[in-house]
Each structure stands twice: as structure tokens, then as C-alpha cells.
Image (cartoon, rainbow, N blue to C red; front, side, top):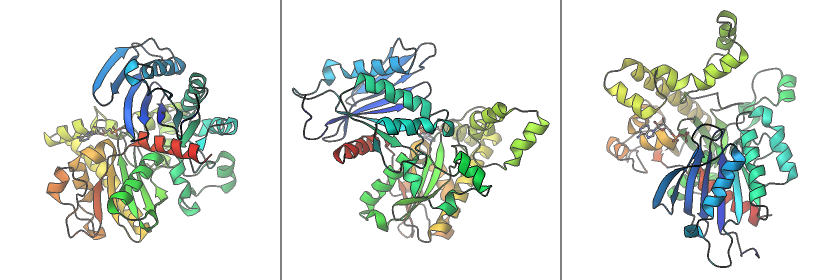
Length: 404
Ligand code: ADP
């Protein structure tokens, strides 16, 4: 079929280790025609859950043993009669892939060609849990949709504007260069999306906007945005640095690793698992990494849960303060992702001691999850902006195609 004036339907693919999320947009109005997830890939009882046109939803068992099968299931799902495109149009005009690590090479989304695929492979050692599955998703998707353009949107791209003094670790330069050890930052698509949203809502041009954006979900990071660009972020070389997360420790004294290896005889893999999978809120609470449950336990007198919340909040506030100091002028503090969007007690606790920065929260607006949750006299706006990484990837995919 001839390509329509501009691609109308963009399929967004976010491939994880045992799941693939997808969303098919009609880009005429950015409407999600269908979205869903194939879960438990390679495990028992894999299943497909989806909603169609934000109305019907269902979960079905599917026969899926690998990512290729899962993408085939997604392609079949998109082929349902209720999703069929208008006559003369294709079911999918372009595919946008979330790719976690773009190293120093990609500061923008790109059209995927052999060079781009080679670069994604090159970064396997930098993101061993993510890039290989993202790559497999791309390869399988290119087989299923061979005639449409595929774009890669990198989680690290937004942070490529971070200057050397913020991305360099104080370690031997030659060693860092050899292994490309530096701060990269993650959640870039989310930080960029809320930055653009803030500019739109505040009716300010991007280059006039200084922000601190708090992405508080299962993974958490805080970014300093100067003139619309990322200039520092809490996550580092890997997603382990920075804030307390669901199961990740965030910042610790690196000597703790050495101490544990010496005194607990832990191996590299033991420490890796400890800090990435068995720490954070999960370790502090002793039972769960779900902030809702932890807040509930804390309010019914569980002192361990209460401390978990306090450690989480203390760390977040510390980063807000540090980044505010570096920005000079702060226009707005933004909260997003699962915890940031939904948890008024966490927002209130983070902002409680930040009056020194001109940040004043309005309790009622905050409890109502309004877009602006600051008082009228607060010199810094405090905003709750729901993130939407999928639509950002879809927009990026369109713009890459239109500019290529
Ligand atoms: P992911 O990083 O996996 O995309 P999310 O952005 O969905 O995660 O965030 C998940 C986190 O958000 C969980 O800790 C969950 O408990 C928390 N969360 C969601 N809703 C609320 C709420 N109403 N109050 C507190 N925490 C919430």
C-alpha cells in the first residue's frame, strides 16, 4: 500500500525480561486504539491482557515460549476485526521501540538501521538486563512488520545534555574511558515528557524553564532541568544509583560492597542480587516494595514501615535540595509516576522541609491530586503531572520518520 501522507498508526513496543508492553496509537488524535501486555514469557501460564479503545478489557492465556511468540500474539491481537483500519490504510504504519541504553551515541530517537542495531548490541554490557531483550524485540518485530519504519527511543537520550562535571566519576580516567563508565541516567523519556507538559501547562517556552522532575515509581529518579535540558540526574552508570527504589538500594557507601564480600563471603552475583533485587523499600519494610501497602502499614503503627517511608522521603528531599542549589532559579517541582502521581502523603513529606527553597505545599490541593499543589504564595510551583512514556515514544517515532 502507498504510505499515507503521514503515518497514522504507531505501535509502541516496550520489551522487558519476561513481559512485553504494547500500545497502538491513532496519531491523528493520539488515541490509544489498544494497549496491553504479554506477561510471564518463558514461564508457566503466560497471558495477554489488553484493553481496546479504553472500553473493553480482557486477560487470556496464550501459548508463548519466547519474545518472538509474544510479538506474534500482539500482531494477531492487533489484527482483530474491531481494530481494523479504514479502507486503504495499514493496521500499523510505524513501530517505536523503547531501548533502555543508548550510551553516548544517541541523544535523539533514531530510525533503526544496521548501524543502530550494532550500537544497541555494543551497549549490551552496559545494560545486560535490558538492551538484549529490547534488541530481540526489535528483531522479531522487524520480521513481523517488515515493510514499515522502526524507530528506537532511548531512555538515556534526554540525559545526554548533562555536562562532564556532573557525569564524571572521580576515578582513574583511563579506566572509565575503557569501560565507558560515567553517569548516563535513565527514565529519560518520562522526565522529558513531564518537562514538555510543564512547558505547555505553564505556557512557558522550554528554554525559559528550570525544573526538578521527580519520577517516583517502582524505579525512581530525580532530574535537574535547566532551560528545558537535563543537567543532572540521580541515576548513574546503572539504575542502582540515587533514590531508594522498590527493590534497589540507591546510594550507599561503595565500601559496603567490599565489606560484604570480605566478611559475608558474598560473590559478585550475590551483591548484585542483594542491591538490585533485595534492597530498597522491600528490604526496609521487610515484606513489600509496594508503597501503598507500606504507607498503610505505617499508619497502623508498623514502625519498620514508617522508617522505610522516612528513608525514602529523606533521600528524595536531599536530591531536590542539591539540584535546586545547582539550578540557581527553580520554576517548578514536578511529581510523576506511580508514587509521585498518586501519593499525597509522600509529596507532602518530601516538600515539608523545603520552604527554604520557596516551596510551599497546599494540603487540600495536594490531597485532591490537583495539577498545581502549591499555595498561592509559594514562589515555586509544585505540580503533579501523570507521565506517559508510550505516547512520548509514539510522538518521537513520528518525528523521526517525518525528518528522515
Ligand atoms: P513502574 O516503575 O513499574 O512503572 P509505577 O510508576 O506504576 O511503577 O509505580 C509503582 C509504585 O507506585 C508502587 O510502589 C505503588 O505502590 C505506587 N503507587 C501507586 N498508587 C499509589 C498510591 N495511591 N499511593 C501510594 N503509592 C502508590
